Each structure stands twice: as structure tokens, then as C-alpha cells.
Image (cartoon, rainbow over all chains, first blue to last red; front, top):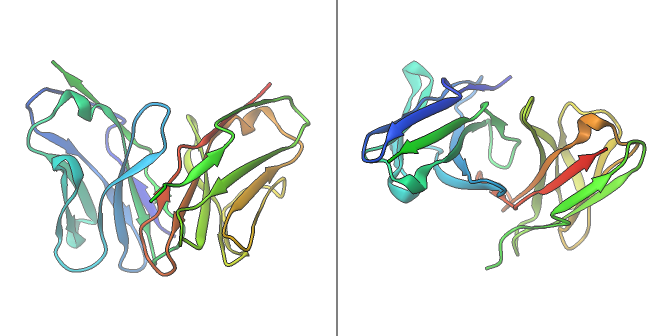
Length: 113
Length: 112
């Protein structure tokens, strides 16, 4: 069975500071990995995904994530936080294309001016 | 291209009633999945439909059911509503054999 752990349900950073949101997964097969963002009263928007190939993936809004198989991690980073980045972020894993997504518990990112 | 649409956006029901939620996928997407989001349990997979057939089902009671029509639109039904069914219900669509799921805005259900 697959599972996802997001360390830190709340993360607070200052505007302009580095954003680091942590995600660890377990999967019995090579996984597909995703980061989604959810703004208040909205659905989920895909930030980036890893399927195969290059382990450093770039997404929208300046976010990127690195797949580290040895650490079973897929941490999300952004060099400089903007106020508009304040939202909830979800890491998810899928064991094959089109299959169900298993989500982590989410991390609420707060950005201080 | 229009995104995933869900109707209604908000719904209030009382315990014991039933409810039907609708999801229209992105044009050309034939796979539709449903998720329940609550503060306590987070995001949980309900079921997935592809070509009018349920392909996968999550760990939910039989009160939760769904179907998919020939135009790929999907509905989910919850019978005998309980207070704990209050949640945001999200629908996602994807192309066949493609890993990325695109989510709709959700239907927020409140059970009183």
C-alpha cells in the first residue's frame, strides 16, 4: 500500500525567504509523485509532477521538487516566497497512470510580510 | 479548453436525506475520480470511473455510489446522509493512461 507523509502541518516563512515543504512516501512500485496547491474555497491545482526521467522537476509559479529514491522523498522548494504563495499544499502519490491518488495530510504555508 | 465543472457548488442537507453531485470532465477526458476532503481525514479517494465502468473504489461504505455516462459526465450519490458526510467533494478527470488528474472546484456539502 502506498502512503504519504508531509512533515509540518503549518509552515511560516517571511516574504522573500526560501520555501521548503517536506514530503516522504512509501510505495511498492516506482511511483508517480505530485504536488498540488489549494487556495481557499477552491479545488486542487497541479504544481508539478514526477513520472520518469529527470529527478529535478520544475513546476508553475517558480516551484520545483526533487525525487530522491534513496530517501523516498519529494520535497517542494521555492527560492523566494511571495505573499500569493500562501495556501495549502498537498503531496500525492500514484502507483500507475490514471490510478487513485493517495494524499499527504497537507501543509499550510503562511507568508509573513 | 474548459476545466472540470462540478454542480452544485454548495449544498445543505439534513441527516437521512440523499444527495447527488455532478461532475463534467474536461473535454476528451474519459477517466473521472472522486475524492472526499474533510478537516479530520484529509483527502480520501472515493472511486474512479472509466468508460462507464468503476475501475477502483476506496474504503467507503456502500452508501456512497457513483456512475458515469457515455459522455464521460459522472455523478456520485450519497444515501442516508450522516453528519460525518459533511465535506468538500472533489472530482478530477484525466486522459486514459495519463497520470495527471485535473480537479474541479468541488461541491461543499453540509449535513445538518
